[in-house]
Length: 293
Ligand SMILES: [Mn+2]
Image (cartoon, rainbow, N blue to C red):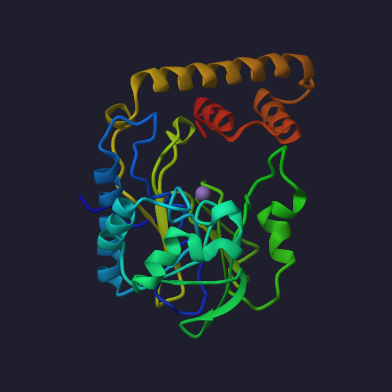
């Protein structure tokens, strides 16, 4: 069953008909936490993108980490050649490059895809004109909210301030979370597509998507069909992940007891505490659900 795209996120952008996707981490083996036939699963995600491409006659820009390993096996390379959409523009990610070094590109599986005419590699990060429109592309960790271990410059809001002006679309890969960020409707938009598949147990709640920039200059989110977690994740992994969440919540409640200020409503206290203590995203989500927001 086809899902309808969500509401437009932003408007007033130049038209370009481009699908932004990244962090596919295509792999031959099955991630330890998964129980399904992972090659088939990956094939279904690629099929979703194929359909979107033909439905919208769209181009594809890939923000890196097409492969999980820099030197995929001949089997995996053939598989990729047969299954990925044609003519994508791809910036190499850290997983695509031996030693995470562009100097080793010639020795990468990505280079084989380029040599076989399947993809075009974007050889350096930065500003590029694609399809007559300025883009900025980089495979680097950017987030839309601050994480305690992260440098300030990796915050989308700060990162955007460092870029040349008048580039309407900024595309990033590496962070497996999907998000867009913009200062306003007429400001440049950063698109971080996130991972296409859930390869680790902590991504169990991730909802893979691709972003489509339409000929109306609107950015749409298209969610990829995913399997029911119980059908594709090992039960022992699911159990451990639930325990970890419970521990996090327990820790949070303990901290809250020690630090929350009196005089405000319970919910306000919670919000203040979350802001101040940089509470993990998943815990925030649990709290919001519990508060019925
Ligand atoms: Mn990645």
